[in-house]
Length: 227
Image (tube, rainbow, N blue to C red; front, side, top):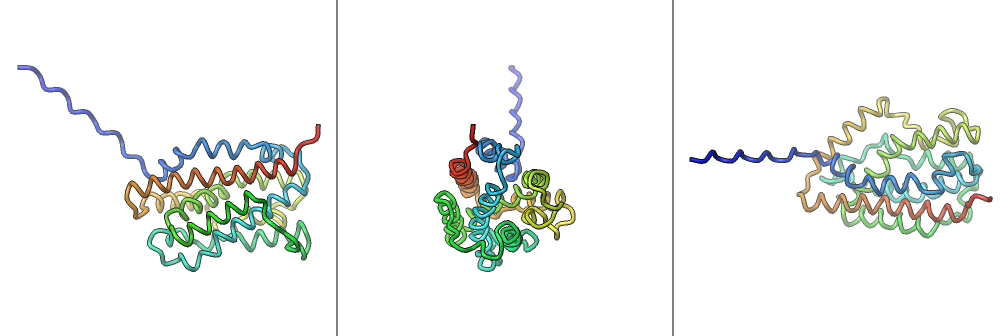
């Protein structure tokens, strides 16, 4: 009598926070390595480029945060609405420092920024799980890689450490960013949607990175390095 074949072991279960991070790694890397971001982080651009970048962030975060109140009780997006993450007021403080009290005068988003903000607003209005993809892409990035931008800005353009000009990157109400990020990933792991919807969220996360990369591309065209 032949011995029975061993039962194959099941593949280990991957938490959704790991799935979404791994699946979007390529798009994340592409955004980080854009020529504009590389030039800015390398200190090769002037403060006007940093200001223009900060202006684009303001349009995107207004779209994210204008929806906060409406989504606060939503079973999917609601748990992610955390007041300690809100960035719009800090962006406005930075822009006042960078451009004076009249910084809003004549300000228009780049076409790529308008498309990005419109997509965020659409998800906030019609698809809460898609909104979570954009929320995750922006805020966890701010708590992680965003701190590199803050350090560069302070060193390159002389902003006071964690002072006006870089307030956007300072989360004063989050005492332990590492613990906060663990809690956030636990929320992702518990996202109350089925596997098909989770795949759609992954795809939207990739789309968010692509929209962000498009903004960097247009900023790079506006601020090319001179030979």
